[in-house]
Image (cartoon, rainbow, N blue to C red; front, side, top):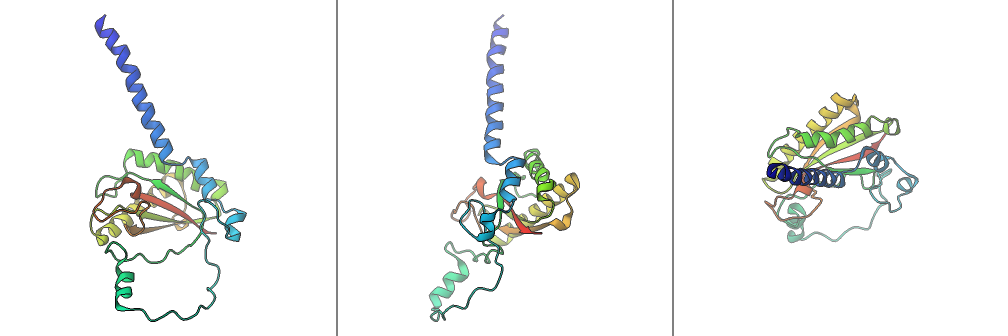
Length: 212
């Protein structure tokens, strides 16, 4: 009888822990419907007004600007290295295009997708294979935290972006030429941190709608 009582007490706790984990995972990443909504261009994105999750694609060459003062040696070094001593990231290809951030879990130092990563990518695959997004192409950016060298992180993030594209293409029949994998490394952290700082929120994939 004592064993039965213990079992009845433990089972709800286990169920509660599993439910809490599922809820936390659901809060961390958007659903397929939310991904479609965030990646669909709106009137606001076309006019360039401030809209959450929207970055405006450059449509023409910027207007000429007045000549800037000659740079000093110190300013050149700062521009070349960035604020934390790493090479500065190149300017983004899109200033404001529909985009979504996903936390995609990989094994440490690996481009192998975990079961949890595949569950996240299943939502992405459903979104990209939907009729609502069928006419668009996407830039799939792999990002890392600052642990490791910049060169290593760029290589690792590129392999992870490739793994994401391969998974979506094979399981959801999304044409590979609709997805451009790019390794961003640790150059554009979602949460700025010092070097060699593990930060799960920076180990992410950003999907950007680059047009039809």
